Length: 426
Image (cartoon, rainbow, N blue to C red; front, side):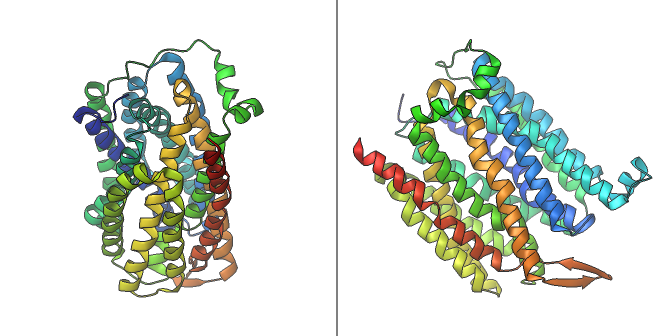
């Protein structure tokens, strides 16, 4: 395969990738804020929503990624999935305690609304994981090679940051004004529009061929001990990404709430905007170093940068120090993510790229998003930090979430060292 990607492929990677990240940013950061600000401040609901959506994402990617392998098609799943993904995202604007109370008059309105948010999150996750996690990620593996994956991943890695920057910089005011229906509607329609554009832009890789193995056999393939023994580097790469992702999920779902309510920084969009711009630039620059140095050699200095940033976040309290610590933390985060993601693609069997997106989801999404937020919630509850707002006692995230994340990040060294040892034998 060529070491260079053409303009059309780069356009698909950026356009489809970025629009998907708009939807994931809203799900990962704003559904939490929406739930917290308009329905319930109980962190248990946030942890439940993150955990259930992670389970939905994993099962969906296993099924639909494998199906895209079996049919030998990515375009169909990308375009159709994006259209439905956008519509389901827009639907969140219609959920409120009042609407839930009308639907379920015998139930507690707030509890019913919170439950509806969790259910709808799973619905939109089904469409999103079909389109993005299953089909688009497999498409990226199809069209890239070992020679260009560091560059491709360094660009893909900044798309979540760019999406956050755009949303925080230009649309966060809608959420602060309580205009959630407009907020969800704008991005829902945007994602659906990109799904329509994908019909004309996306071209399946010529080497992609339908597979004839049974659906059940294909579904269980990556879960078999024999498959793990045949692909030790791949599963060690999954383990490293899992521990890294758990560390991220300890603090990430609570980040905006922490900045707003613990630090008391009202205009957090400026803080996050500066941090995301800086980290994006670092990520793009790091792409060539990842390809030249080697993915695994690059992981340790990148993880050290992230570790220092997490420790700094524990101590800082005012705007400028928070920005500086955040720049270090998020730069390390992006570099580690790009290097480990590229390493996973290197070891993914090309004829089962769709199926292994589902296995990747177990390690990169399901386990981290169940374990990480639960650890974060336990740290928050243990601190007993609260405040009174309109007579309600509200729980507040505390700096301890960053130290807990740092402790988990240290564990990433174990599978990375094992990978480097195996790499040295070859």
